[in-house]
Structures are given as structure tokens and as C-alpha cells.
Length: 132
Image (cartoon, rainbow, N blue to C red; front, side, top):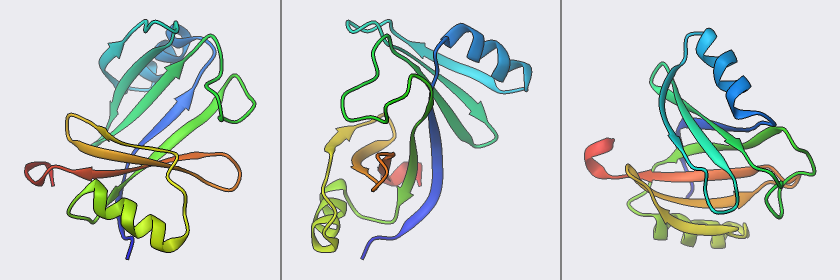
């Protein structure tokens, strides 16, 4: 059975990464890192807010399959109670939920992505044992 343990992070899609960073840092969020630009021109910033993260994405073109917008929510992430990403995939199949992508290896574990009925991407993260 699928069981979410916690909200791990939220991902926002923004038009201007530098302006977004200025705004969120002014609100007291700590910049942890910036990734990119990647070959597709996208950049990602990770900010800390308490014990959670805000992932901010900026891309010249909205990724395929995403909501038809140049800004807004990109995804949110749920930390799952599971032994492995493979277990989450099996549970998703039993629940009739299609896996959009994954598993993807992360620093802290492995993620599987699904899409809700309105097109919002949901990341399901299984943290490494030492991270829990």
C-alpha cells in the first residue's frame, strides 16, 4: 500500500531565475545550489526553507507533458514509506497509476514520477536508509 511520510519539497517553474532567487532570498530562504545551464538552456536553483527545499526551475521551453504555462508549479515531492523505488512502482501499478518516469537516482535516494489528472507532476521519493 502506498504511504506518504512527508512533503519533501516543492518545485516551481519561473520565467526569470535571477528575479525569483532575489525574491525568495529576500524572504529569508537560503540558496543551497544552482545547477546549469543545462544543454537545453534550463537552470535549477535549490533553496532551503526550514528542513524542506524549494526547487526553482527556469527553462526557455516548457518541458513536454507539463502544464501549458511558462510559470507556476512544476512539481511537489512526497517522501514515501517504502523499502525501494521498485516497491513504489509495484504499488503504483497495483493502484492503476501510471509511472511517468523513473526511478531516478538522487543524492538522498531514488524518485519515481507520476502525473495527477490535471497534469501536475508528483515526485515520490524513497530516501536512503541513513537519510530517514
